Amino acid sequence: MSPYLEVLLKALAALGLMLVNGVVLIYMLRKVLGHFHLRLGPMRVGWHGTLQTIADVVKLLTKEDFNPSLTDKALFVVAPFVVFVPSFMAYLALPFHESLKFADLDNGLFYVFGVLAIVPVGVLMAGWASNSKWSLIGGMRATAQQIAYEVPLLLSVLGVVLIAGSLNLAEIVRTQQGLWLGFIPRWYIIPQFPAFVLFLIAGLAELNQTPFDMSEAESELVAGFVNEYSGMKFAFFFLAEFSNSFIISALAATVFFGGWLVPWYPDAPAWLCAMVFLIKTYVGIFVLMWIRGTLPRIRIDQLLAYGWKVLIPASLVWILVTGFVLKAVA
Amino acid sequence: MPFGTGLLQGLSVAFRNLLRGPITVQYPDERIELPERARWAVRPKYAEDGAHKCTACMNCVRACPDEILALDFTTREDKTKHIDSLTYEAGACMMCGLCVEVCPFDAIKMSHDYELAVIDANEMLEELLADVDAASVRKERPETPVAGGGTDVG
Image 1 (cartoon, helix red, strand yellow):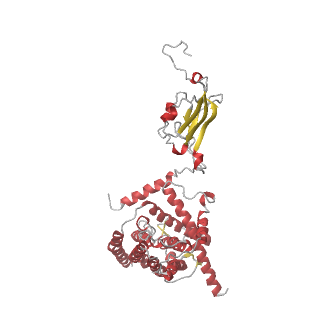
Image 2 (tube, rainbow over the protein chains, first blue to last red):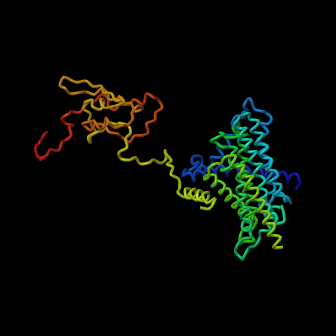
Image 3 (cartoon, rainbow over the protein chains, first blue to last red):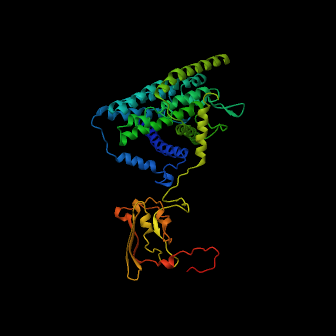
């Protein structure tokens, strides 16, 4: 096969995964949150509302592509793509199985965080270009928050990188093969539990998820930076948001929960491994939704103080501890 | 209590809620059974032979705080009455039930018809009875139990 065709097919596959994942996650979010609230969620379109998201997508696609008159036209149009594209690019590094990955990047973990760091730029562009105070405040908050929490997010996985000795996500999974004491899977969640807690908290903030959904904050900012957006441009923001939850959850599964490895079944076939990886990822997403359905939003100053004064020092201390222990063991 | 346990408690409460199952009633497909004494739109009550029991005494019309009941009748020479119309404006009714309470002949009831939405506002004005002879007072007077019993008060 021509290498160009191969790259094109891989990109299309990643895009397909992203879109299908978005459709599934929107349905899942509405159902899960509904049941947390003792409601049913969507029930009307299709069996138990399964076609609801498709109906919504059709609605968004057929809506007028509307630009409010006083927006900064160029930035307003570009912003959704600046948010969408990094999220799409991050799929490149995720390994679904030894034989099933888009690319084998030696610095995969670094690459994912690198491209996700572009997202706040798009969010700030959207907030600024909308020329609305709610959008601007939302965009500013999102930027301050995501820059503050990217640091502990990256620091929290460095402990694992120290143990695995690699930034390659596939390699990190490979080092988690085997069992401790014959029955405990050698997942990094066990030696690195504090790091996982830090990763979860920083990940929630990175995803703009409750309790850290400062940039949208419905009760204060209406919809934050997406206020002035409608139709497909709005859909791009939300697609990126759902795809980011998938990526963060998939990263957590890869780094802390053994990625595609099936516990107690080392010779699992490739399809089962990929399924197990997806199940782990979706359990992670369910936990995110569970948190979203439970906890109230905190204030922006509390959020930033917590990020800079607690999370970053805590993750630095944890890296130090991990380093010392590794040296001592060696 | 150690720091952070409140968060975990909150999560466990939310999860228990998840397991409780939804309490939504999907209205057009399923309906809640109304309590027996639910008060909805006023409707005439009929005897077993299908005859209405209204004697055109006007008590309900006078009792209605919203003045939404209207009774037009003509009295014939032999003192019998003919009901031209008994109208009821459901849109303005507050379902207080005073008309039913005050009716001496048990001729109207608070029904269980609660789906009262209409397309045209004029449809809110309902005719409960139209162009019928009023029931005879003598026939419709409910039998009063008499102390000591036995004697016919007819």
